[in-house]
Amino acid sequence: MRQVSSYKLCHWVNPSCIIPCNMERGVCLVQTTLPGDWLEPIAAEWATGFVRDKLASCVHRNLVTSVYHWDGSLESSDEWRIQLKTSINNKDKLVSEIQKRHPFDTPQILAWLAESTDEYASWVEGETPFVAMGLSDYLRPATKVPTTWWSSPNPMSLKPKPSTMTILILGEFLFGLGDAMLIAADIGNTPWTVLAQGIAIQVDLTVGQATFLVSALVLLLWIPIKEVPGLGTILNAMIIAVTIDLTVPLIPQSESYAISLLQVFIGILLIAIGSSMYLTANLGPGPRDGWMTGIQRVSGIPIGRVRISIEVSVLIIGIFLGGKFGIGTILFAIAIGPVVASCLAIAGRIGSQNRTNLNSQQ
Image 1 (cartoon, rainbow, N blue to C red):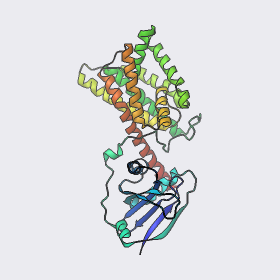
Image 2: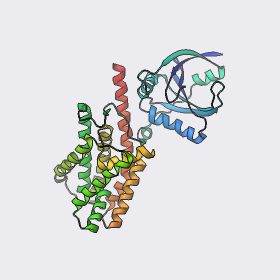
Image 3: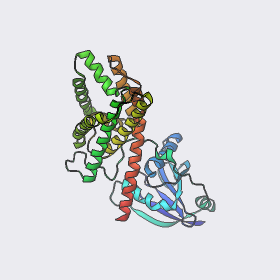
Image 4: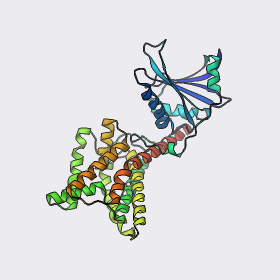
């Protein structure tokens, strides 16, 4: 038997989380458990997702080494055990991340020497090659709106922190600027505008009146998904509308189709970045984004898929009612979901990293 230096983190969701470490070689092994009645592909997918979504912000070099089923000899039920090998340099960040996500203020952290077989110890201490988190991993879409250091703990707060308000306002300004870029491109309205045009044609309303009607209907649809408005919901309409009015005249309209396409892509990116900033502020989404976040929360479907489903459905209904659309409309409907999800992931990782750094300095 050999001694392997270990840490045990008592986690509420995963009661067993053991980290055998070899300080000299810089190797760290994370072990946690999952319900034994899960199918193997589900357990493997969860293990990969755990690294991607929970640890990517604090562990920049990681590798899923194994997922195997174990019929517990000490526990009353069987379980899956997931083992992840990472660098010892990130151990403290990992501990901080688990503490931060723990439902209790002070999760128990113990350190001791754990005995293991020579074969197991050699595997823990071995020179398993690390897999660096590349750009594709960093941009991997988030499945829901993440919590960051600037997120308001209370979405109904009327007196948020200055940093939260700053990010909220900046995010909604970028959202409005992105909308202005799409308008200036003039090669297709957003799916929601197409829907408003279609309704206006069918019931003899102006596009503005139809837009208001659509927004009111969407807010009513918040009720079954239990979405609640906040300060961000009110500011969303005001800031975006003012930004569009102020910036559209400043954006030159080009006769080049290529430039117009470029403006559409820039507009989509600005809207996605703005969405990721103001949504993570957690002060209430805009009417249409609230439908997206509410459906995601209730259904568990990844937020990118929810968004693209909404946009495509709205576009189809709008076209059926007679609304006008163009290539910009189609590009927006298809691209906005994945791009928003990727920007949310980046915001979550940046927000989590800064929070970890702040905690370590305190």
